[in-house]
Image (cartoon, rainbow, N blue to C red; front, side, top):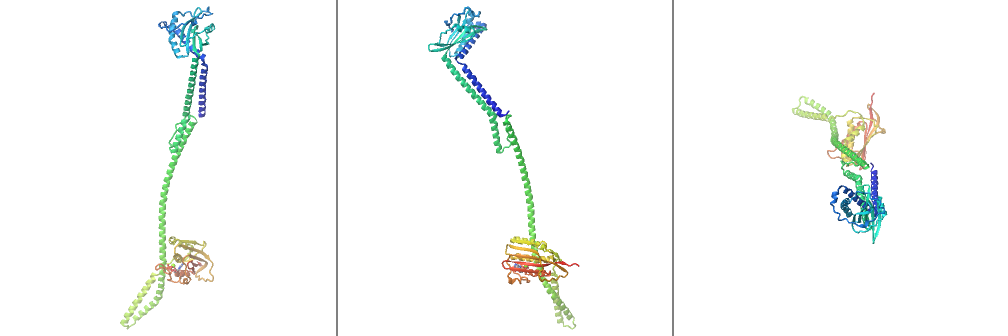
Length: 575
Ligand SMILES: Nc1ncnc2c1ncn2[C@@H]1O[C@H](COP(=O)(O)OP(=O)(O)OP(=O)(O)O)[C@@H](O)[C@H]1O
Ligand SMILES: [Mg+2]
């Protein structure tokens, strides 16, 4: 059932109950005025009398033994009935029996009167056969008073109707009630109950107070019950939910609230439990996923570390390899240049070799001359052996200075300078030199030996690096150029197509103008001993010239230098 309906029902029920109780007790209080109260008392007394009469019929022996001393007879009821001819309907009420009734009445009435302080006097009279009233029992509690009974009243009672009489005596007001006493269906007498108005009023007031108190207690109890019920129905489930919510806030996702009644709170509790359950499951799932992600991440990191380590190592190896290639290449350049010295020596040897051979021949002829003095022969033999030794030495020099040379062909200079720029990278990077490359995309091929052209370009790049004190800039560029004016080419078996230019520019220390003519001379170097041979430019110029090209320089001290290699793009003429 819905909680709203429950509360409404509860409140309505409570209000109805309270109203009902209040109405009931108010009604009772109003009704229980003086007359009502006295009529009630009289009814109780009559009931007692009637039951005593009934008991006397069955327990005569027991009643006989009881004393009647405490009973007093008063003549107040000796009133002759005008209706004397109408006899009492009880023929069996003998004197002995009456005694037994009186005896039986004593104890019961005593109890009643003890509890009823307001009752001043009780009289019980019987209607005699002759129509008179016989005082049967009279009990005066406090103040005796004459009771004036009129025939009207008696006849009313005889007809079965109770009579209430107001009396005044001195300053006191009294109230009397006359009530019929029955024996079976018959009215055999009447009971007169007299009470002080004041005492009755006091009793009524106290009863009203008691009633009010009872009503208040009833309201308090009902309110308490209502509060308890509300607590049970609403407050407790809400409290349970609130404490569960704060537990969830603390992170306890295993909390579950005991299901409340089948109302909105019950539904709320159910939803809350299922919500917490969902959160718990998704949080467990999230935790699992997070763990899985972390694990995979760790694996990935380890993999990356491994791969990176491997890559770094390879890179280091590569840098080292590049460095050593560059060193070797540099050394090779130097040894080539030194070899060129060798070639020079070879030329000298060749030039010397021919006359030496003729000298040796002449010496041989002289030694074969007949009659030659022994001393002369010995000298000629020494000379011959020395000439032979020189010839052998020259032969040896010629053998050792012969250099291997790559076969000439069509060379892409872009490729050559690109490879060289990579080769010198360890040096440029370590010195902080910025290398800019601008290569013409459609550069024609040149005819020549790749190793010789490499030597030219590497020497120019090396010189540029050496011209920079530390950090600086080198620009390597290639381009196709128009034919230099007045240029005559000796194209033996070759056909000129285009001209190709390679420039190597640096912003280094530059070359004083006066020295520009010296730098191409063999053995001119400004580098420390063992660092340069001074043959780089000389050989380069010779190589370039060998391919019908030009090697030129423009330089300005402290600004930098531009070395320009101009080569014809030649093709082998195939006919
Ligand atoms: N770009 C340049 N800037 C300044 N000076 C240069 C430059 N290029 C060459 N030179 C000067 O010309 C000299 C001769 O150069 P060359 O290449 O012939 O011999 P090297 O470089 O001294 O020795 P090697 O070439 O055998 O290492 C150099 O020592 C240097 O003084
Ligand atoms: Mg050089």
